[in-house]
Length: 465
Figure 1 (spheres, one colour):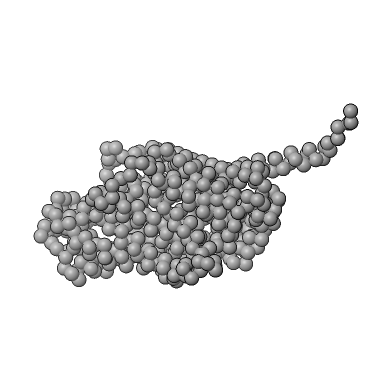
Figure 2 (cartoon, helix red, strand yellow; figure 1 turned 135 degrees about the vertical axis):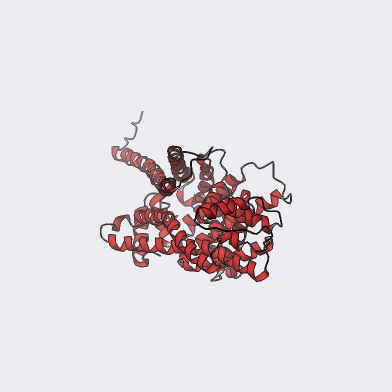
């Protein structure tokens, strides 16, 4: 009997090290994504709780029945933070696991062209961890819009589809899209808040700066209905030391919207108040990504990074404040011009509100317009469903999960195969979390260090764009 070939301990250890490296990649991606999800959601929740505490101290009214206490709100915010952390952590872990598994079974080079597409689709259902009964139609549509943007960028540089996709590169298309979105979203905010997602409705009710009694009054005059709560509106203005007398036969609701103020003075005073409300919203949005993207340069360029965070926060807060203030100004001007208030005039008056997006940084405009467009699409179809023009589908219960999974499949495929369609700062974050390699390496982890270094160098040259 011939002796068995001797296996080298070095070969055995090398195999084990590869397995450990794969496990390390999965755990690292999950932990980093959890930190991002919990950090972003937790930061927003923290500022929201602090703002609520401040309002409760300043308010002279007692707690309403059914309203959550401050402690209950904090617990709910903590649960929401953990859910979003688990969602992103599971998404990253599922994607990397599927990526490594398919590469190990089918070979990295042979599966490189489609592996990320499959892994992205497999990871998509992790959105259910935010709550099995919570629908995320707006988020799914937004991610679908992001996938469409990436796909269009791939089409623009394609020889086959470049001519077809060329109109998608219109320089001011983001602002026009924002105007369209504003017309639907703000019309729903005034006329039919049930067509908006609860979280977004709450956001608009805070930054819209008007109590529900005023919105109800504008809605009634736009619909040509009889006023039902003029006394509630007058009571609101009396709490502000304004003695406002409202005419039940009025045709223009300016006195409902801003009492004894003129349209111009109301715009200026509202702008200042809206700016103060917007600052806590944007500070974590700029601060958390800066800590992640520029984590290695915090000690070297701390003042520069902090300055960019503060400047970005100030500019975005000015955008949101101008957006909300101009919404009331445009509608008031239109109502006065036609000496009437109607549903078409509300939709028309809220359209130019989207021009406020020009205040924002160019690279952020498309992000904001796509986010709002996703909300507008959801709101539009909800309105169509409410009036019976769009029957609700009974076959597909979780269309949001299907759309989200399809979108993440496209995005992760572009990330693995068409990396140049991503902006450098997003590519840097995605590389930091996922570590998806080019298709020429033998294992998914062998080239990621070099790829990350190249992207980091590119970001140093590009600045904070």
